[in-house]
Image (cartoon, rainbow, N blue to C red; front, side):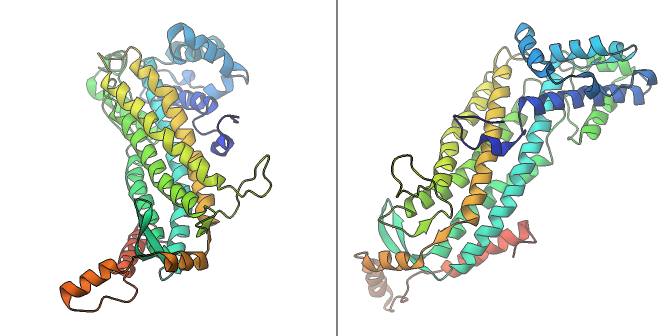
Length: 401
């Protein structure tokens, strides 16, 4: 996929694309049909490779048909039944409703997105560990409220970046293992599945079997309780928060008058050949500005959820999660490129520190209070704090050097 107005969208590949979502819906329908057959409810002759029933141009046709019923499931099921022989056509989609298919397909697509982001996190953690270790003693000026504050080290700054990344990756890992199945039938009561299976236990077994087949977590129906979706949105926004912090520091640190940091591969200008713009940082910050509001839409939709299927709030989630998912993957790739190629100019950091005025004022106060001379470099527990962050990273990523 490409998007002229979101440079780098191609880096997300087919993740959370319309084609990926259609494939996920097919996977749900196929796994459910197989479950009915394996349970002895539908005849063996009903088994079919549903993916073979679709043609390349069906995606657009199904998308256009979705306008009639408000979702793409009806059009998909109609096409599949038209092209299926009996008894496949008769048993296809029986016991499911459109929400089951869409919500479960969203979980499948989200899993792929979260997995791709997890791979990028591994790259980022290795790079940031290396930067923090290499520059643990590289003195630099710490700034608060944009102004010179106290001496610090670039290793401490990189360890702070790493902390943000680790804070984002921990819940993401837990989320990956708990994405839930959605099987509830028309109103979330499993009524049709109970009728098909002949018992409540049989209906639950069908739902659990679908979860196992799709490698999702078994769960009771959650039709209008939307925390499964908002948790994904929150995790994605938190990722962008962590990366945005890094990108903002790099963009600031690469200003000509500061010059402590630089992107390994900057961007050019259409009219100023001398420019070496921090484009990775710019594009990461772009994602940060939009991720929070997109996650907010998911929360607004969750709060407006009503009855056993919402009248518009549910529908607002789909494209929102798609957009947020793809943009977060792009930001993940850009951040990996940024931290692995980051250039550190220790000489400029030292010069900026030396030029700063008034940094010894706190040291003098501490000397007067304690009667002891303050440490010469006045970087406090920086080394220990860096070590603690590196140890945390190693526990999460055992192969991180």
